[in-house]
Length: 258
Image (cartoon, rainbow, N blue to C red):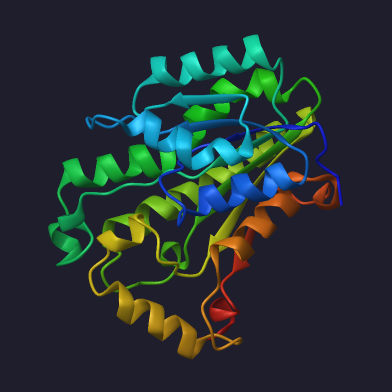
């Protein structure tokens, strides 16, 4: 299947081989996409070299740092894509963060600083990224995909501030889809079941969450990053041309249970 042959995809948030962004980049590349990859700039020596080695098998056209809390950083990335690739067809927003101590404990004690930080990085960053990518997507139309979790709509132990952020993110998906539809730009979310990623390691008692999901979903197992990546690739391509403003669950059917 080569529905994405020659298309240009921006994939954000690659951290390591366990990340959903990594699996999605691998799948998009396998379907013929040219890749522009970004990673979170960290105050650690060798971060860029680590990501370069991690992704060299994808042969990305661009590998750039991008800080989603810095508008100039996002503008620089979109400028590089415009100069080197001329357009975008796919954007994967795979960025989320919260202060660890705001995930557990009493929801009523979440700080304003922690609440706003989670909202900025995990939800508002989609709006900002779309604003910068829009002129590139509008060349031929395109697909924007973000990643979410069922904690957006259900109270989930040790998810707290991120639940509010993911709810905001899903709302943004719907409003962006409504705005951008006339430009042939689709916006959707994939709600993944729990997966052992680096970001998941910040959730207290995550292994309990993982085991609970496997016991209480329809498939009686956890989903994989590769399965989520396949959903991303589907939403990126023409076979999902009539789908926008939606949240697609890839959680083994956990969401169907009361």
